[in-house]
Image 1 (spheres, one colour):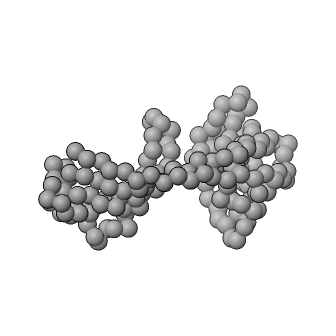
Image 2: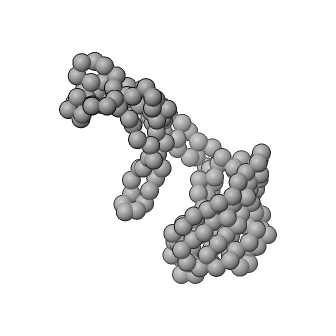
Image 3: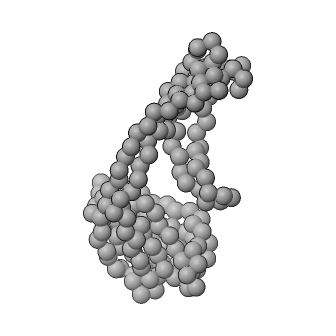
Length: 171
């Protein structure tokens, strides 16, 4: 989402020009404490501006929907070194240790939606972090989960449909 303008009652744009890069807000989906969209960016307005001063907010919202979603499944014990190619991306389960999973990707890494892990009873494990990096069309990441991993699920999309919407919020 991009906030283009925050107009005050006198028709002045009150977004602090020093922080204009903060007008591009990237949202992520969070499940806890309840399902919601979250952003780590704050909009900075001119010093002294209050909520009562704001009359109108204008901007653009880009909505990106995955299409052709596929979930690849790996067994933590039986599928080490297994490779699966889907949606232009080759995924390889390199290693697992109790609550850690190492995966390598080759190809359309941008099509990766997420990585989930499940315990032996099928309960989804909370992701507690990841690290790694990419170079060109190859990537190597290690994921850590809260609990012993039995099954790994890698979710990929064959592509994305993108729609852009302009918005105006007025008091």
